[in-house]
Image (cartoon, rainbow, N blue to C red; front, side):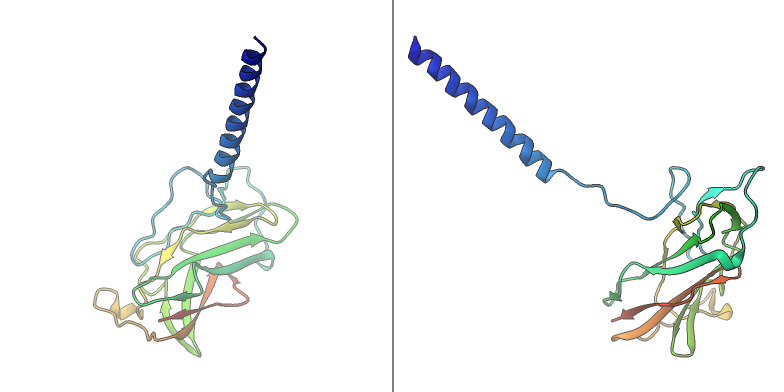
Length: 199
């Protein structure tokens, strides 16, 4: 009888150890949700067009929206998904915008106000406004100190100009060439460009 009880106790301890080990293993191997700074209203993600930009910034302004933003209090930042790109890899550009004031305010973050330019030295190689077929105004309420991010735009690594919108475009130099992305929303411009390399 004593041996039977002892065996049952040992079996119970073994079961507890196995359960604890499984829980620890699951906690260590569980999938983690990536953290994103992108703040978008709604559940769908707008898709950029081939020649234009798509906006998905902040909450749409209502009839009782906050006062207009002071453009001097709006900070815009160029964002690129990597620092360098191998041959065939296409950079993805985004615009970050932050209300640096202490109060919520309303700002036009529509594609009519957005622009992205890729430069190297004193030369502009590409501009988002050269062949933008459609644009729109989007009034949005910007929360103080919160970084809002536009939908990503994939750059084709090609030159742009208003007279090449419907034709074949030449690829920009690569082989380790250095470029800068600069952005603007309304009158607010990025203070510094985002440097990246093309191979």
